[in-house]
Length: 490
Ligand code: GLN
Image 1 (cartoon, rainbow, N blue to C red):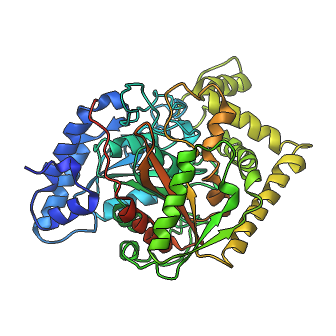
Image 2: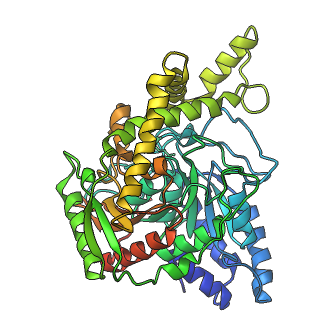
Image 3: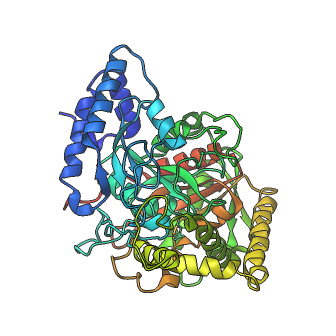
């Protein structure tokens, strides 16, 4: 018998179309795997009745050879996306029992293409974090462990529930969001593919806002082709999001088999960081060689403002967050903690409703936006952001895409970094630049480190050129032959 949970999304969709199995069977197998994996804490909400109802509806369509490109495929949804009638928490207590009366455009697009919803996935509170330790509902555990050790590792963040669930074969694929790296970093920590598309590709309508000028939705999947299939369904112009781009969605799956002959790949010298483990450096060189072997021309490039990216991000993202999160005042929806008067009700609600990291970001954001500091911090960070975007534009004069490591380390243990926010922020050093410049970036699993943990390589592309990201990503995937899986211990 097929072990349904071991299939890739593309294999599952093909099997459903050719009626080798039903969506009900496929969905039931995943629901069973989810139940047996509750120790990972990947799901905040399982929706088995909804899943089986959606599966039956998909089977009815498949029986008539109808249905969309994801018809009958069970997937997981990061709990930042509003799904009509389903509790949404954003990993926070402040939303209380919030049940959105509307659907995010991205999830709506997936359902329209026939995807089946398994449940809502755990995440760092309001997507602020790199380890999932900031969830108000407890950390997520990475199914991967170091060789010979049972220390619990983080799955990365903030889309850690999404990556843990896909890596443990609880869903065929999942969706996440990426404001500074939250799809790519957790994908790298769990041996998966994750892509943050160009800013504006996916609608942000119905996605709980963190930093609106940086937030983008994207897929987390087992293979590059699966990620392409998912993204094709997720994106598209949406008049409900004023930053949505009115462009046609290309055939991302077709791009996965493109030849790379003559493609120019830039290696940015500023991404060679002091103190970076030598195996990451070696993997980066290996990746460069794979692309050379595939017919690419390798060019050295310079992105001189890279070192300012992280400080600029940690001004801009908290500034936007402090503004976006002002709406959680206990008045309209969510948690309310009553005080003696209106001000103390606000204060108590926000003090009790938000976790430590969210409070830290709101305070930093409010500070950098305050009169007297606005020019020195916020305006300056915006200027840095413009320089970073310019660095990339200059690089595109000599290359078509960039190759970098995704993260400066493999997954770390729960509690190992959490008491040092600055150390935690360093996780995003290679990923935030693409958010600041609005560019697409994909992470592909490329090797295991000396501890037996996955490491990823990142490809950053030009705006709206996800196709090159997929083409290069698929070539790396074929060359790396990464097929390691975590040992089943949960
Ligand atoms: N780790 C980064 C942060 O904490 C990025 C988070 C994200 O991309 N949502 O802000």
